[in-house]
Image (cartoon, rainbow, N blue to C red):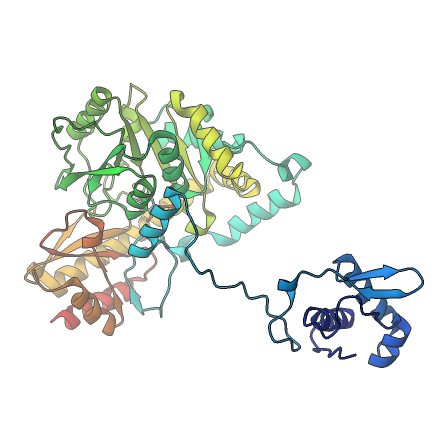
Length: 491
Ligand SMILES: Cc1ncc(COP(=O)(O)O)c(C=O)c1O
């Protein structure tokens, strides 16, 4: 009998693990009779109860069998591959290395190809920088965290059975009604809860829309430059991307190409173009809607951060101008609250409700219920609007500190785009054309400053050197010092 205890966790688990190791390493071969629990307990200096519990677990998991009259034996038919390589006290269930790559469906192959070419994750990796102008992040410290915990706790404590059960795939009615009312009041979108589908962030909405509207080989009109999260999903769905160049007035629809099928979908960020920040004027919005009607296409409006508008009221959404039922409107709480919430919503034209809800049901049967209820309370009790108003003021201060610092430190050497809205600006660095952006980013990083090249967001990258600077999570002091250090590092 070997039975080496490893000293970790409850005693009966140690005895169970030790016996299991001996069985798997064939030190106790199939058919071996195990000692009685009394004998084992005496041998190991543990109580009989501990030995009995360990034996019960081995029996329950099929490592042993009970034989009337002859006690417990090691199961005679343990599969060969269960044997641990080399034996010893600790078990290694290492999967054998696959000799050939697995046979994937075309969608799986496309997903892998994209992941290998790009960076398919949004989380922070690498050592943190003291002055990180990473975009796409809200001001985490401005969020009323204690209040949110109270609302979440209240919903959790008072949860009825139905709150803990599966919910409707389209989301909790309380949240959809709160959203419909808010969209009518603040975004000029006449909608009802029936047309709203709650999703796990914009990313899921992009995926659902692609599944429902795009077949491999279909064309998707996409702003150039654009949000990579959208490009990747369309590409993974096998779409052919048609770039629509963005100028100072936003996206410009390219003329139709003879003998080419027209796109089935256009993806746009009209209220704060990502990443350039320009706003699509009314004339081009109408032109886009007209194009969609002529081509029998849909338009996906991604309104990710336009509620942070620093002059005047937020612009009316494109969906508010849509009389034809062509626009799917996409909202997220990632920038207005925090990204880990993973909640967003789609406002879907009546004709697409059934298919989008079906796709959502197939994807995950619905988003997390208690968070949806707490969010509905957050909106209906006025906390959301108060939080937005407060953070709009704070972000406006960060933004003007950034613009002032850029003016002071760079003067004519920096041209700023898209500062009227949102949480980032695009800065074109004059006089550096031709310098690889990697060299600019490396110099900045050596000074503790994180800046992000705009070029990867283009299908057809520009000659100019542009960097994105996000300012949401930074303090005014960090912004000032970061820009000072950046200017010094770039010389
Ligand atoms: C254009 C755009 N859309 C959507 C999102 C948000 O995505 P999600 O709701 O999946 O967090 C971002 C975040 O950076 C974005 O830049």
